[in-house]
Image (cartoon, rainbow, N blue to C red):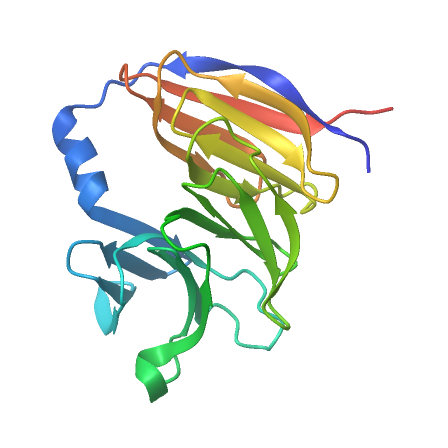
Length: 231
């Protein structure tokens, strides 16, 4: 397909967040899919899963969970029951239907001491993780083996990841500085980037569109709309 391009320049939205919300976001990490939600409590080493407002179960991790993501397409007919979690230097996969082993389906260890801070999945089911080593590793869910590895793609630690909805071969990468870049994961090539006015405190992408936004240390929220550049 044609290369992705930034259609709308990033601009600050008129929001100003206070410090108390930032502290809450440090303690809690929430990810939802339709009416199902999962909340990671890092210090408690636990993940609570909810169906609307009903608590379904609690998963107990070995390390401090920092990011989680429901697999969009796990390829085994499990729908949204597979949860990918970044905990310490491990990527763990949890099947919410499974009772054995506490629900833990798979454990993939990264380099010792290199903490994972971000995890995401694509529409094809691939799972990407990134963190302290400034490297994005993408795994094939059918055999849980790495299919690509983009070494040192970010200047600083990676704290946010999101696959493109336009083309899953592209991925958005957020570091702890003020830049978000979009790159082609097969070629390990940067396509474009946009910046906030200070370091990012948070980053997210719309679930079915390439609209990305970030919250900066200054209190501003920057948003960008990404589309396909016609050749």
